[in-house]
Image 1 (cartoon, rainbow, N blue to C red):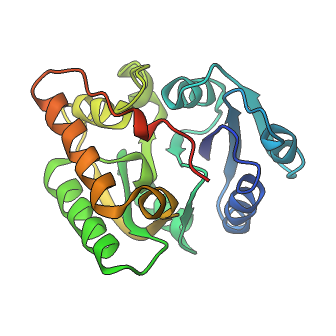
Image 2 (image 1 turned 30 degrees about the horizontal axis):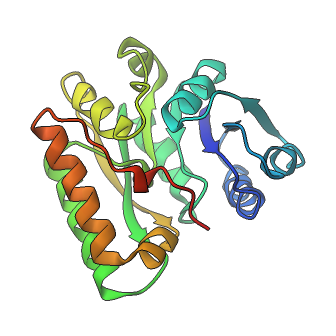
Length: 226
């Protein structure tokens, strides 16, 4: 069974649509849907709880803490961590189930933004290439990992940002992941609202500071975007 963990905070407008899209794919694949609310002040948790078959949990704010809480409660052999503003292409869960049945223990999906702007297409292509070459996956790609492997690595580091990168740096020492061809399509709202090049530059600066052993910073990536 695949346990899909969706961390949310103040996403009342998106949560039911995101869960409905996942449920549509769960017909032919055993799937457990877990939403972990990080202290929403809107109707996010209530709307998530209204979706049939969804377990709604609560945790302290912070994507890493929320995903760890969801993983601890999960019953599936495979954990899939999916952002609420990212939709999997039709058939993605079936592709994932088939790949893990053949022995794949970790990886993510090929990324695309929801908006057709050429700059966003270019950024996604760069991310996909980097993921394939380095084995470092970003949360927007829909990261998945075998549960026993996730637990053996201590889960996500409970930091404010880059929990996905730091976890993958540990992960690639123990397992070779793969980028599946099915797409994870992310809402482009952050890039469109904050500026495509500006947001990209901020992300590159955060990664550069991390590589140099400095505090990443990057408050803009923790701000809520609507």
